[in-house]
Image 1 (cartoon, rainbow, N blue to C red):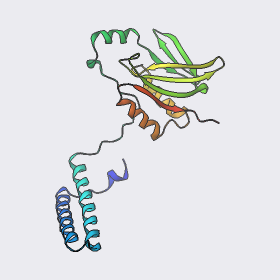
Image 2 (image 1 turned 90 degrees about the vertical axis):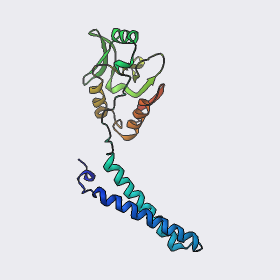
Image 3 (image 1 turned 180 degrees about the vertical axis):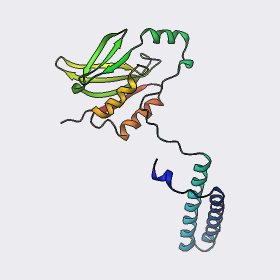
Image 4 (image 1 turned 60 degrees about the horizontal axis):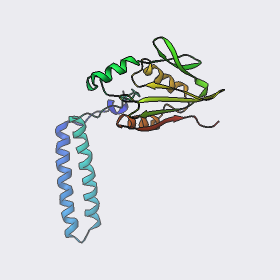
Length: 204
């Protein structure tokens, strides 16, 4: 719980009275400002009063409609099963992929068999791709460089094990766990298509 949550809150009736008083004072000062040749005193008073009215308004809003807390789930929320056609659901289940990892590598699995893998030490970028080619789900592209050149894996957004991988990436990829990364994922959540560079390894 934050310090803000612990702070005592102004009773709602007092906030409403404060809003009315501040707004009334702002109007009074504004009228006098216009009728007294743009007096600096009335101008400052009007500005301060409007600021106080805004603050009281925010207090009232937060009491009636509590501020939503930032989500800690960094996974892109794709369309739910109810939103997909039966044909798309069948195709999605037929190619069901899971992702798992250990201290050495990240790998995708299908029907118990390894499909692709990339070493943690080789991972140099993470992207989200949303396109007609991959619908109905966004895809996580985890790319890297290996002895045989560029490598990488493609992880569907509904892959089993993706939540655990998200937590592991925050711990293992330098600079992944920050606001810029989170905001990029938020942007991808709201998009219908596009390529979103989530993270890249900084040069040593």
